Length: 225
Ligand SMILES: Cc1cc2nc3c(=O)[nH]c(=O)nc-3n(C[C@H](O)[C@H](O)[C@H](O)COP(=O)(O)O)c2cc1C
Image 1 (tube, rainbow, N blue to C red):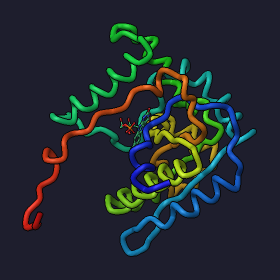
Image 2 (image 1 turned 180 degrees about the horizontal axis):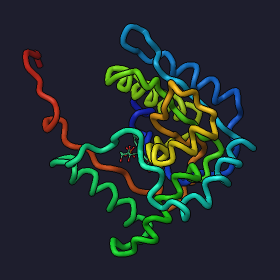
Image 3 (image 1 turned 90 degrees about the vertical axis):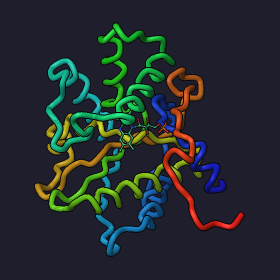
């Protein structure tokens, strides 16, 4: 698959088939993803990959947690800046509206919206759940490096006919995840990520998020035609 096709065919997939992904494939994706650049070649990413029974146990653990703690456990880092200013606020709002519209869930139906959002904590039925962790002591440069690694995972997945969804929603249950993974004190969860085969018939997979036009976010000078 050409890089361009991998980039343009990637989207956040939110419904997966149960078809398993072989361990060798997941290992290969993660190993090659580590070719991502990082400041000083620190390679600050840490990955926990779950499938089969360990994944099923985590999903079972999470199922009642949502009604016990609908607001989660609080996040141990700020995901969205407060206040979220324009144009970012509108961009975030638009994808939310598109997602729920694809499912026919109206704005007023908060319970149905929450039920859908809670699918995050079942990894949208993906057969593989990844957690990307980071050193608590690391700063913005290392967070950015882990973002590049995450994107490599998403693109390499496409090369295997697989799809992904990055999931910071897992940070809302960072205590449960920490305990379940036995995460050492010096690490914290940066994001979860679903990995598997997309369900092409699922309505939630049938819309695509918009992007700003090129000239709205990039400027060019000094080029010859
Ligand atoms: C670090 C990160 C965390 C994300 N967390 C979630 C999440 O918890 N749940 C979710 O459904 N989507 C999540 N997303 C997906 C974004 O909503 C999505 O990337 C954005 O709307 C653009 O859509 P696209 O990925 O389909 O192109 C996350 C994306 C990133 C990069």
